[in-house]
Length: 139
Image (cartoon, rainbow, N blue to C red):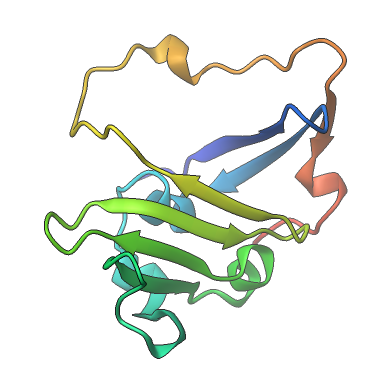
């Protein structure tokens, strides 16, 4: 199987900036794409030793096993509903010190989605910052 590279666009309309990050299969296949093996790529534990958060969700920390990936993205915390085991939200501190929180709502399993939903063109006036110009590339 050939290794693929994916592009992640982290767009902040308020700051009029977009960070562009090219990533290889390993880590993001597991986490973002759902195609890998989380237990193989991450060390998984309860967040701060606490199994549940105040909303009754499991809180799991995912620490990349690769030192380079760990330095680049740090810890990913997932909040999982114990009734259906769906991920309700995630939190991550990126290599630039930004905290990213993603909340999922109105989830549908395996919907048909057109490819055009996954094309991003930065709006006029938005500063495009390539991650490799700011932080060292991952191996």
